[in-house]
Image 1 (tube, rainbow, N blue to C red):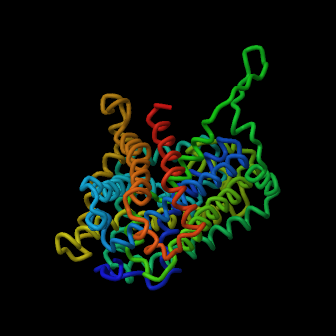
Image 2 (tube, rainbow, N blue to C red):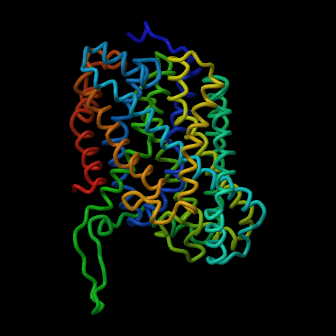
Image 3 (cartoon, rainbow, N blue to C red):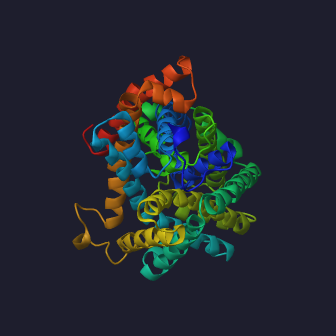
Length: 471
């Protein structure tokens, strides 16, 4: 079937470029911003080990499935699912899976661009020496000052969105491919430079020990001191659920990005081998980020469990107190921007591809149209931290940003991943999946089929029900 279809958008020039692009989509703020702080909050090494197991059971099988669907359909996620539903003579409702991915990616882009704008602002602040010798109060005041200024946040949001639109407007080979060919090697080089810098600090071994030495009590038990000073511990599965959820979200699954990138994948490239390379690279970036960040945190006597403020409020204190901290702080936030940029172009691409296919639009106006819509929706996120942050502007106790984040992360993404697994595992014929995977009906295919039919859907369902408060 794939031989009869070809993408009107072109395709990646090689399997290596596809891997770079998919890694660029997967590697983002989640790897460099979220992974270190949730690792810090959940005990370090044991959490990392549980996370790696979850990647193998959820991330890899569903990524194979999503790439498979994309290459089989060779179109935007919406049109790909329509075509595959016809191929398999399945119920038309399955075509909603394509719409769900495109809409989810669009919603995420709207607030992702705002957060990436913060990182962009911090590049210039770090370069100007704004954090040199700064205390925790001074750094906190700078961050609060940025968020409380809607004009500043909107300006950085606008700049980042324009950066994203420019790349996507240039097409698969001229825009996406050239961008990831530069961004991903640059990202790895910057990470390695920062890890090398962390190695020069006295707390590097302490950071490695925290990151890689398992302490399973912190994963399975939560301990608190009583009023009498006695420590009481009880069993908890919360860190495991956090690892399960992040393993799914970190690979950009269920948002149309991997599916549309898969549609540009060369026909002869192995999906399974490409997936393993992507998973290894994505996980490697997260671990390298931890190796760079935790020694910096420990060498300055800071708290690794600082939460979401680790990047924007804790690390600037460390950079401000270090020799050459101005240089390496600037490099760190450039790294953060590159990671966000490579992910953002994958978030906007599914909607742009659909407009080109269905409405005959050229890529430049299509990218401008989608980008402007996402930019406009992002204004709600901009105002969520200042003018619209009050309770009178909240719905269900959440700001616009909180609602978008909750809707996408806790509902749309898990449902998207769940239905991708169910469609490839139960609806798509064995012959079709074997043909697209270029595999024999042997142990490799049977293992993937077992995971994508039973194990992955069950674990994603657990993530979903936990996120919405049922378990």
